[in-house]
Image 1 (cartoon, rainbow, N blue to C red):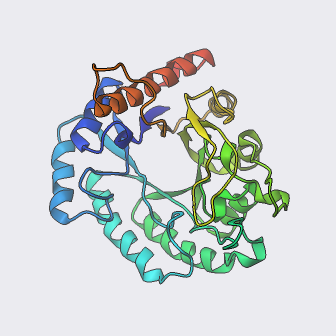
Image 2 (cartoon, one colour; image 1 turned 120 degrees about the horizontal axis):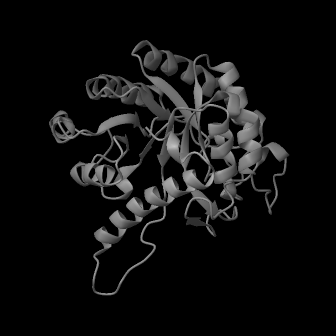
Length: 312
């Protein structure tokens, strides 16, 4: 088992991401923001070469591309060429970096424009989502890259039933389970379409999909599902240290490791600046320290659950 993380939460600058990773004693980054105004699929060739130069000889590698491909900002009704372009740009860059995994999703949830509540499953255009994923997943697999779908605010994150439906329909697709998304995500598998919407249970979601999980994201939260009309993100929720929210972090991680999981566990704190000593630290310093402290606290959590010796 190895530890990694979205080090852009320490700082967008790839050099500082490397510094934070090395301070933690880790060897991997899940690359999202490169520090050059976008991710691997969005930056120029010249800026990509700068990312490569920063990593070369650093002792730090990119284990996963935390891409925006088919994410919550992408409309299933938009031209498919937009997705294909991202994939075609990403693959050779990932290969050059030696990156063997990519985080993807399943396009934005279709919502009622008045209530912003998700439309029923029969109005979610599942066939089109599956058709597109069945084209891009083999593209990654043929390039030696494993695509993993996150239980985020897209079709596959609406409930565990949808996640299973995707992996059963899209050959070769695996899952990345994020412990911190269920605590503030509506459980549309319950069939409730009026507020208050029932919240997902992280443990229930995980328990039903764990046979398909190839990677883990760690964040934790306490929250509710009060969406403002026209907004993707719910209000009224807080991200907290791993193990202190409703994400069943200790229970899920222990279950994975007890059952032989030996893959990556990636930090995605989403906590921002959680402390500030007046006059002694800049905002950038606080972000950096929060990310590093999050990683250190998680390593202590691993010791608490009897798996502190599993890190490699």
